[in-house]
Length: 119
Length: 114
Image 1 (cartoon, helix red, strand yellow):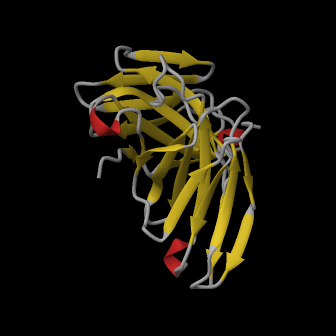
Image 2 (cartoon, rainbow over the protein chains, first blue to last red):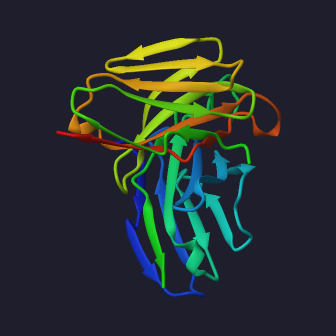
């Protein structure tokens, strides 16, 4: 058990809909990362938050957004869903503290993922 | 893309044999990490090797790093059926706007037959 909790584990929805995925990082971790894993694209970095602020952006679509709340949990919002959005969405966390920097240089602790199926 | 690539894509061996997976990456790195993923589960960190290290061991795992070739290898010795999983390398950029970013390869699917 990594200590990172993601809900829901599975989600089935229709095209055009909107869903919210939730992540609770390990206790004390300030950085949260979101990744998308699909068969054709592999594991793609979406976005990183550190202590409530967006710190890095990867291949995140404009239809997707995220935020990190004061209690450090994070939510990933996916809207106007398309068939191609079907994937496993992972959250990972790290302490995010290395000489005061938000840039982690160690391992990521992953949750078990949320499997999204868009029909 | 700055993602690395693992080779082979799939590897099938018998229990007791050694499994070797290779990884190539593109950027200058701070470290390179290996992760394991059981089918449909989260990734689990296995081992991290820093850019100034050439070899590292952890139990039955041995990782090498050749920064001049931008490549790494993961060796699992005396494999077991329970080692069956996908293995990913992840290179961590050491500079620029992507400092700290982890770039994952597409993984090697290892199957170990009893």
